[in-house]
Image (tube, rainbow, N blue to C red; front, top):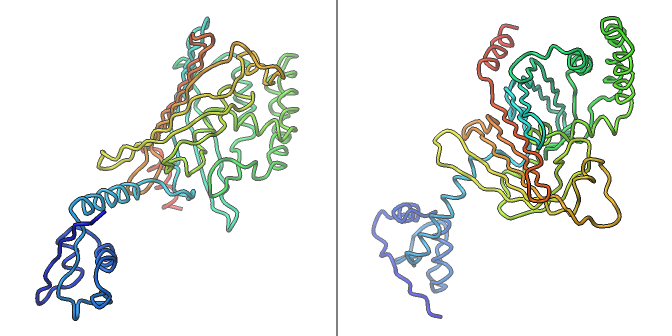
Length: 357
């Protein structure tokens, strides 16, 4: 197939850079194209001395180059494939809503506080704390809820080891977490008296001593899955297969994911990650947390939708909107929504305090 090549006649004062700039392409691309199609005696080196004409790419090639450069420029606004200590804001306002067949909708609001520190060649230590809980827009006043929150408060903040590639690897200092609970346990037992409270504290203490079980409790929740994704999720251009927990403390299911980007905002980037469940498992298996040997006839279907908003300038995570939709026998079984929004005033207040210190 013959290629139609146009040429540019070099004039006094021309440079390779000035010609490339007129065309709206890079100097390297123009030089590479010319040297591909010119005679050996007319190869361009470091300048245009001795060059009388330059072979120009056709219009469609120039248009293709510009589109590729536009995409490269847009993708430069995405977060890095490696975590950095400034990726997270100090505080996020969180809201979770649960819609489940046969049950009243449940809404929970709370504050998420994050502190991250980079370890030399060992990723990051990220401390997490949740507080200021509201249930159905009111502070929980039943004793079990209060005890549950008090037990979690006794081990907070929880420090996780997070590799530079993202996703929680484990607890940073598990033994310190256990000791923290044991030191505060007497205060819990003196305040929350009675057999029911004692049984709850005993059960919580037992779960604390099982590192694998405790880690799964955190990592299988929607909150921790979306806050600590694999960082290259944001930049993937092809579909991929991955695991995701759709029911806490159950097993993770195989899903097919894809990533889309919206660069239209002048300040932010929207990153949409959608997934569909591909595992053949039943609702009963998910709720029990155990897969059966024989395949189930009533396999559950569902979708996962994650929408991240990050700053183009700082690459900081500003907002997450996440949703899990599970269908059983083609009817809605569960819809779990989570929204995390950076709380600007908290961040500024904390920053001011650090400056004063």
